[in-house]
Image 1 (cartoon, rainbow, N blue to C red):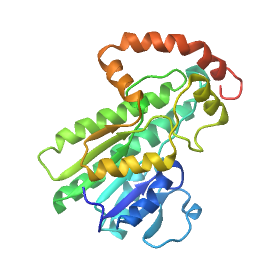
Image 2: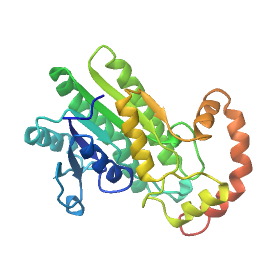
Image 3: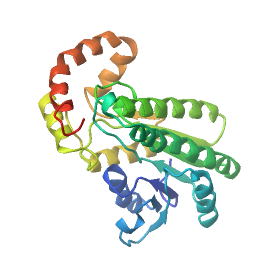
Length: 260
């Protein structure tokens, strides 16, 4: 996938991985349209346009129509918006469950639904989705997040196969733990207690761009996380046992009274 002379719609570009993608895309010769509920957070810079878009809105499909009318030259979309919360399932409010489903999964489906026929008609286009290792491995305290990311992985796989005889590219990239503002300090402490490696948003952004340039269909980031993804798929009981050993540590942070 070429990056030069492309127009990318970037969803989730005001923080974390999305924010780290903006400058490398511009340096690669792309024009970037950052869509956000809070466009005021993004300062003016060359090669970047900022638009308002609410991925949680009931009328997201209508917002996307207006966006395409204003920017008809969009030929790539990078969806890296997401919400999560580290908490036991009984502690999750219904509104929190709905929010994660809406932003993490529903919005990705509606974005793809909108742009797929546009890209098919133009004869080219790219749909890039940033998932998670937790889209392949269920992890205690992230039941809702895992459900949405498992759903996103399945959706992109099915969509890629549905569009296999077209020029539309569908890419899925699954980072491991990443140091973003979305993680409260208790989650950072949990990662340290478990010895989990944590990537910077910049390193993840670099690998996303590399996956795009290499025309990867899917890419899982980090070692041994990539191994655990495979093991969980073919021998899930091994991962069950490993998680059971970690569960007392996980519960210590899960029941800290701050996050649950």
